[in-house]
Length: 123
Image 1 (tube, rainbow, N blue to C red):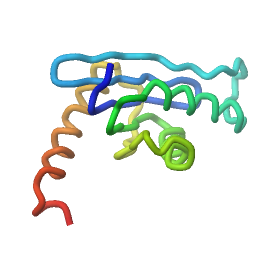
Image 2: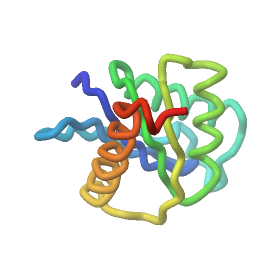
Image 3: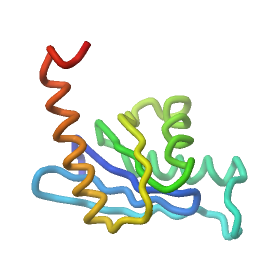
Image 4: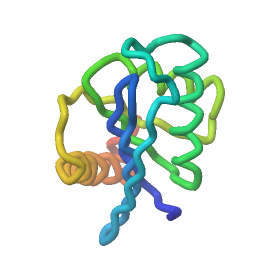
């Protein structure tokens, strides 16, 4: 599904990639390839981030959310390795349902798109 917006809820073990438009939502879960209890080995994290970036192909703007530092690390990793993935913001959240994540993202992007469309607000 090629959409304009996506939201990713993530930690170091998995990600819920939710691409959406006004009427549709497509979700995909991406899990770490590691079976270790403690994540964080650079190679394992890079594989997880690459799999998430692949799931986001065709999406123009991405909001990333989650409970820890993985969301900010993913944003920085994308800037360095996958510039086509545009992470517009990173917001801390606990463990909401996918429906709650999409509702939050729709509200976020409504404000984001309104600001981008109004030249007086963009300086």
